[in-house]
Length: 502
Image 1 (cartoon, rainbow, N blue to C red):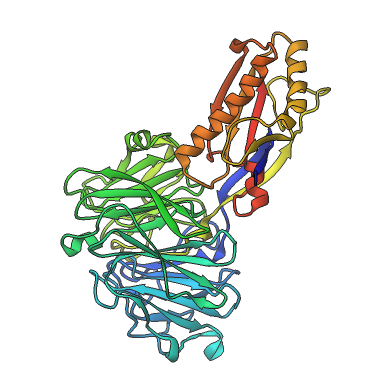
Image 2 (image 1 turned 90 degrees about the horizontal axis):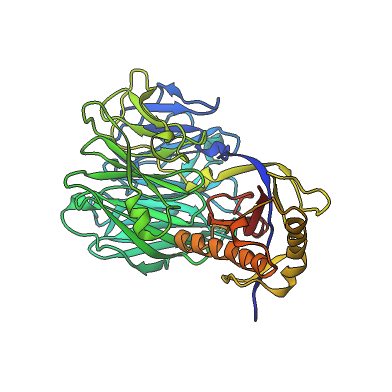
């Protein structure tokens, strides 16, 4: 069976940011440090009961009201009291990503709290269930479903993201002394105990220092990256959020004793950041640079602490900025514009005061889909041969390609002939053709595919006697969406070839 996708040649004016997901309003971390993002900017909180060197997680409800927070062993409720039965969980505050809280896909009161042990300990990855409706809304860890073990001997890496179906959740960890990713699916029926396992990338072994370092999904779940602290290696992968399969590894080797640690992505997923804890530096990697080799070469130092103070975790907030702790200080630094390349990303040290509290290495681990890019459509213009404007980008309807291919289907020709007519009637005009894809598949391959689709349009115009020197083409892959990629309808809008008359 042939698969056909409709590509719209379009112009949209849109505003981008991280979605205002209020479940990430509150942060508790470090030595009783806390932040409240409810107002749109981080305000220091001084009422935390949590003290942790590394791992922690927090979750609020959809209205932004604090529910609970944890270091992986103890759970505190919204009143900063130990939750009923909320002690002796199997995480550890010295585990990089000791825990992550996941809302039940259907119930508003049930939450899964996943934990991982420190230094590949025997407790491995486990989960407990919290019913937040218990005790008048203060919650309780359910005794019969506490510390349910899923797998032993995993590293300190734990991250989660939405399934492509928009309701289920992937929770993923990595094995120790092997190269195995284990992706557990959470559905309305519960946690599927048999994970999707992919063997790919480096074998995680060595001393227990190499169990440390973050692993993160990008917000839309199309990429996954991790840090191996002892071997000073960063690895980036594709992730299929429909199947749970990890693929297409890219490895970045950093200088010795960098002690790479923190990982984060820009809200649009186009740029990955990592911290070198040992040197107090943050680097940027452009995932839209093109080939794997170009992505590797795009690595850029964007900032460092004045005296080499350690930088730990990197965490995207619901204001669209990335924050990082400066070890044993009362400040977080910030990357103000994480979707901008090089120093345009606006790195700043000592940007957020923690009051009298201090940061350590960790920041809360959240469900990464809370930070999906938000696109607000402002205007759109469809191509009309009678209303062509120079310098404006248009949607050209019904440009058809087979799925994953770049050969134009004949049903596209009628609309393209209208473009030919405009160019024939305006011989001084040139045309810029720009190809785009959705976020499904490998970013490098999508850049190539989008460029080839734009070239297919170019080839057709040339066949109609439009001079080649009047035509320019570019391929942008998935880097410039005009709609959210969370639904097939949104992805269909993003699969397009735009044109502009110059």
